[in-house]
Amino acid sequence: MNVFPMMYKLKRVFTRIRVIILVIALILAVLAIHPKADTEGVAIRTIIKESAAYEAGMQGPKATDTPTSREVIKAMNNIPIKSVEEFGAQVEKLEANDTVQIKTDRSLYRLTVKVDNATGKKQDLGIKVYPAPKTNIKKGLDLEGGTRVLLKPETKLSVQDTDSLLDNMKQRLNLFGLTDIVVRATKDLSGNQYILVEIAGANEEEVKDLLAKQGKFEAKIGNDTAFVGGRDIVYVCRSAECAGIDPQIGCGPSADGQFFCRFRFSISLTPESAQHHADITKDIPVVSAEPGARDAYLEKPLDLYLDNEKVDTLQIGEDLKGRAVTEIAISGSGTGVNRETAVEDALKSMKRLQTVLITGSLPVKLAIVKTDEISPVLGSEFIRNSFIVGFFALIAVVGVLVVVYRKLIITIPIMITLLSEILILLGFAALIGWELDLAAIAGLIIAIGTGVDDQIVMIDEALSKKSQEIYNWKQRIKNAFIIIMAAYFTTVVAMVPLLFAGAGLLKGFAFTSIAGISIGVFITRPAFAAFIEELLKE
Image (tube, rainbow, N blue to C red; front, side, top):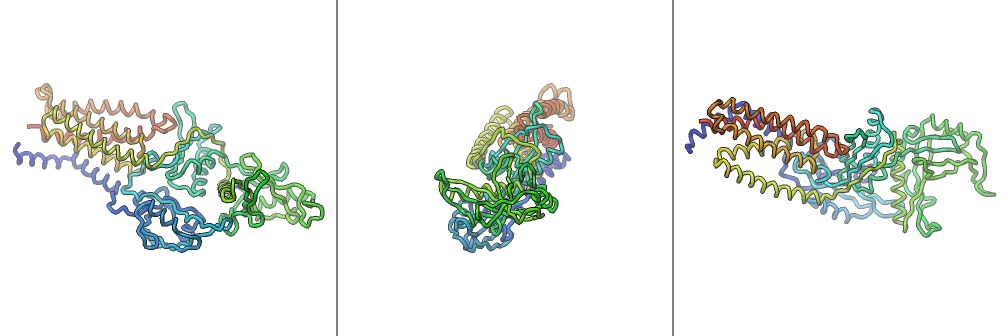
């Protein structure tokens, strides 16, 4: 092979407009992926509200933040943090009231470890972390780990009710301290409506009850509704000063041998609901709790209902009769086999009730159809195995092409085009924030396979003796593209129904397949045609 004619041909290749478009697409893809060499430290996934980290000024990432733009913890008390395990080990060493200095890639924070007033033990710092991302490519739950919940509304929802439901659920999950959330409506081929919720880094127990229950809160006096959650409540206390285990009652053993703990927190009502409460209570008689007791209460108590089930009963003091009081204390309880578990159950119930009171009830009840809890370990193993399998598959494709065509000048452009398609598709996914999960990776493989097949069609059409005798190069490529475009539209038509099939769980597969073959047909295939036209024609 003469080097100089080949160099001349390559120079002409890179002056073709189709190849220039490919090069620009590759540069933009690399910018979108934004690979980082320095990934030491752990990225902040969530900052829990009212925690020590939150009060120190630390903030969790926004849903629109790219992975590489998230704040990364570099050190704690001048000790470098390189992994999630190292971060957890440093947190374990902290004691109540300790001061800790956390250095991130943006700022320096000083936190004081808070003390649980009920147990006297240290509270969590309120920071959830994960390995610092190396690129802007978002990994789905199958690779990242977390919980996926598929819910079905009891009744058919209008577009307005669906939007309200999605907004309420997102707010409820955010208030509960969960981020990296995907909440979206979807349908199956039969038209059944579903809500798909994906939460990275959360376990099934944390989100199952929070999502399944409608969260309809009502406070009733007899048969009259005094106020409801969300609409009539303007403030819910969540700080340690006005929320926690009730100091007057605390925790103790119950009659069945278990322990119970009483929690209490304050809320503020709207003036209208406070006046409504006064109108209901003004004619209720006053009775004493016990004969000779100093405290007197109204004859009818305030019953608290959550999802139409009574969760607590509060006595209404005599001094509240007929008064428009906006400040009210809400209480409840938790149980456990010992004091610690009872405290944990009580605080968990309090947190959920506070969340429901803030967000209000969902427009409709939801039934859990399916829950999946995915370990991040499985995702790491899958990624590693995918690279190994992909490497051997690439070697196999190269081997077959060399054996069939016996020309490296054909094999090399095919490999370049193949890798270009992968890079551009990953860049496109990073740009729009599309998450790569197992289904999406399957779609990527489909796109790659289709690409190799199309390139072979183009080479066979260009090198066939019949084409060489009858057609010029332009006509040969045109004939190949007729076959390629027919296959392209067939594949797209076949993939469109999968965007909605299986409650949208195959959406990643269909979307990635369509995007991949579209990138190939409109960007990489034309560039490949320019390659073979310049390199193969005499």
